[in-house]
Image 1 (cartoon, helix red, strand yellow):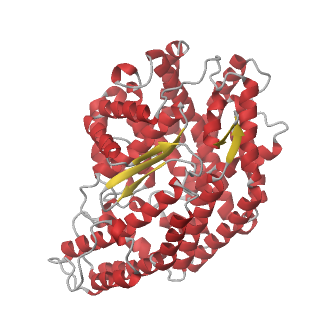
Image 2 (image 1 turned 180 degrees about the horizontal axis):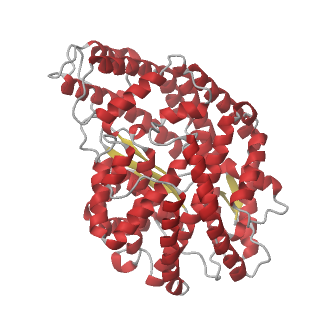
Image 3 (image 1 turned 30 degrees about the vertical axis):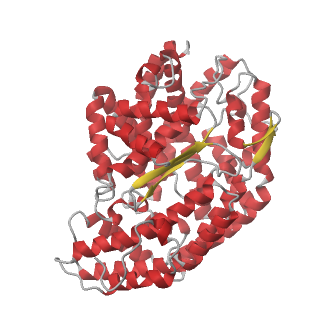
Length: 577
């Protein structure tokens, strides 16, 4: 335990009132305390106690500023934290890391965290500390822009997420009006987004240059601890998706066009049920969404149901859609209490069910690895994202057999078959979108100066749409086509974080294939892999889950074959739903 200093606060809320002058002595103690095989575990426990408070406070601010983007008081407090606490803490963390690395000690279960700490130490530049804080502030600025997007729809002023269900309306004119309304509101933000983008790109380029990298992608690759694949590997994955997935989706969409009886497939035709059925409406209230999803989680594994009920009881969910709430969905871990928080924007659609299942997988990862003793073994940014997304995407597929009411879920057998068919089609089209977003970001950071002009990014995006979605008819929608990527918050807020979804989706389909053969065994392997956190390598995590880390054309084709055969099996029943 810390000596010669007062006890640390028990909660991050209390810690939030501390000044840097109060915090600094704890870092000084860690950076100067002698280390030995006998003292290292206690030292790591103390570092975990302090680091968890800093980390959880940052998480709390991040959540609070997305829950209510109009809360200027909390935004100001967060900005003050980013200005006065976080930079100082980052510098002090560096001293602590160097102290540990200089000791030559390797505690049990700490080999992989040490490798990542060495990467952190190599990336660290004191000059970047305020720049990284500035980038976080620009991310908040993006949330403010996106969170203010409301439109008049059916006589009400509503956020865009409340309009999105109309894209599933059998009335084509209504779908078109909804789509154009949403896109027009996004295009309205082009000037402020262009200015924000220019500032983001300049800061990212400076951060990379300060750390000695030729471009931001090279810097980010190390920051994400991508030890097991290269940018060239991801480009080959793009090519595999173009080769394997584009023709499959084109065939599905041609059938969709014929079923709809339209001359060409327009962007507002891709979400509606092509047989004319109204959109699935799985729930009326958030309470119903929570209750039925909890029952589904319990069917996958009773412990998952208990985890979710804990979140309900402790107000660790924010699922509805409302004005001044940032778009998107996430699960973030509170590292002091070692529990997760799930955030999403529900609108009464099946997509909400999928989102909650997805974020539930992330949340259960937080619960399952909570027993790991040290923050550096379970901190979210130290987990391989390529496996963290298997946790979420895998949960979507593991839960898919339990969507029906007889399991406590949402649907009749026919409706569930329809929902599953839609989900699997979304998996296929999702790979296309993932390749497009990742290829766009490759181009951006290979052409940093040119890409600082958002219009040049728009130009390149058009080439990707033509390559990966050739069957969409964008006639008369040139500006909408060019700016379609502007709604992708990852590009603005989490640069180069997207290819993980594509890699992980392939892992999730492998997990699902295992579950078809042995559901209990697949779930047990999945849970075991979640407990490992960041203590082993990415390929080892995949192996622990009973799957293979791969994203080549052959593995992709195997996944597509399973998806297509399942779609064929579900189709007769789905047509009744």
